[in-house]
Image (cartoon, rainbow, N blue to C red; front, side, top):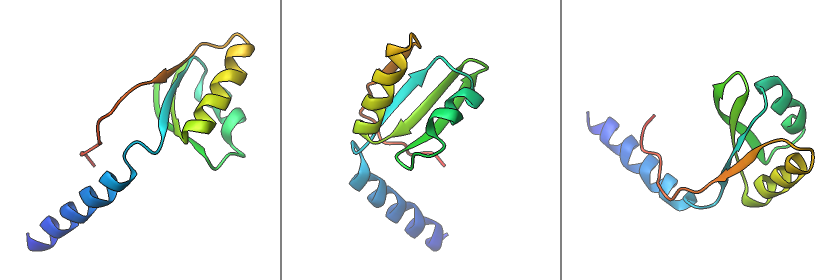
Length: 90
């Protein structure tokens, strides 16, 4: 039990240090379509597959803004998600 408490403490401490350093983007594309856009990018990843035509991405603020602009210019719905919470689940 003591080890579990230590791990939990240090995990929370590390997460607090990265809070706000990235963003999230909802995209109206399939997982396969999104992968075509982000496979070569280390600054973006799939955070969730919400539906067959809805994916949420996570990444740096600049990468999120850049991809959002690119996809929007092609008529693809995107929405940058505004959140200020720290994930605490595993």
